Image (cartoon, rainbow, N blue to C red; front, side):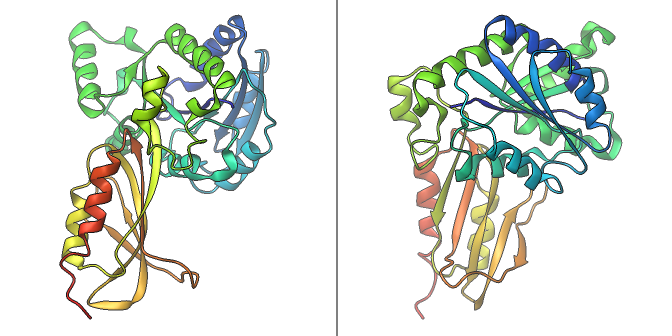
Length: 321
């Protein structure tokens, strides 16, 4: 099994620069590196910057890997042969919506030769939250991270650096702050562990992150991202469903599924909780005949029991037909 790393960060944060430092560190530890590098037009330029390193680099020009280039990204991952002792790093472009991409990387059953994803977000500390209307995207890329690297810190005085660190910790208190050396060592150790015990990669349990306590009891490493799909009642009250979505715990970074409402049980909607919006988004759907109402949750250390109970309770107040 191969560790799968999504590397995110706003435009100019220093992702490729960080990779140029990380790859030699991993190579020195005996860990092979594959890189998928996504950018709008100059992916091959950035790939050339990494060409002298001991890494296999695949450039993906075009749109973000969370949308327009998603199919190409997934096909590239499908085609990677089993290579225990290596790691796969996806360098997403600066405009990537990480929650959307993590949803695909976590739930796609054809990615069984990879671990569940971890996410390193590179933050330009000197420009943190100075992106005008893009500040929300920068925060969102931090909000789904499992690891954080602060870049360009030498441009800040001590007071500004402390304020930036405090703001980022408030945005994502569970993420680990790393540097090149500590992340290389962590990733090398992970590659060695999943090489000998694939269950530590998180995908082999079937219900992705549903057994974190059991795995933690016998191994020091558990993957931070997981997913679970839960059935919803056949129909629900709109008010109750909106409240259910609004009260999802903070561990859930992505939530979507199918739903029918008691006041109009004919159509089935695709529902989606969009980060930063107060209301759930509903889109018309044309489901297959065997499609049923469902809820898919993706996140860190998901509270499985609480989510299951909350989903089941949605049917308690629906009047009988």
